[in-house]
Image 1: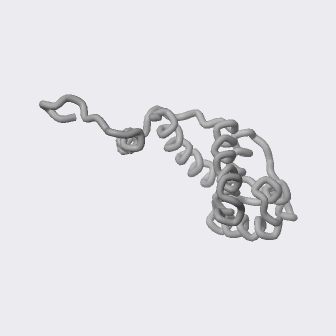
Image 2: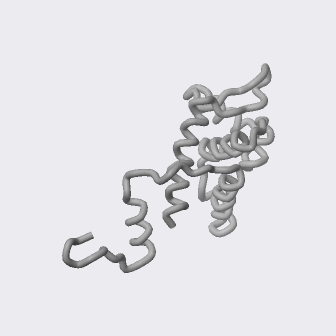
Image 3: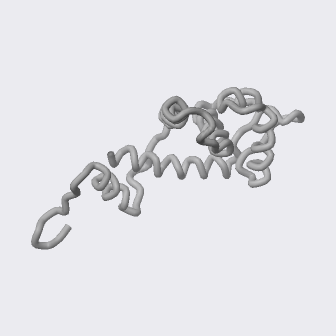
Length: 140
């Protein structure tokens, strides 16, 4: 705001969104549900439908999104389920799970590495991100 000109206006929706998101504080905590997270995943998957396959690849992030959805839904997920959901071979998913396990973000349960879940550290981190998403959702 300027003192003599009144509220500052933005010329286009993108500028308006940038102005809303530029505030450094989060709004009230957002109660992220599994359905909210599924909508984020649907948008990610729609990229391939629009631009074709092979252009976007972020397996670690896709694994985290899927495991956070499972966490919110209080479900367990196997390596094979993860692989099917994110459309990668189980061997690739196992390698990424090993990387995320080294970072203490995910953990495997049982002797054969199945099922997989977020650690408390991983769940807390995804929860913090969900708070940012919620602020963005509520700002729009």
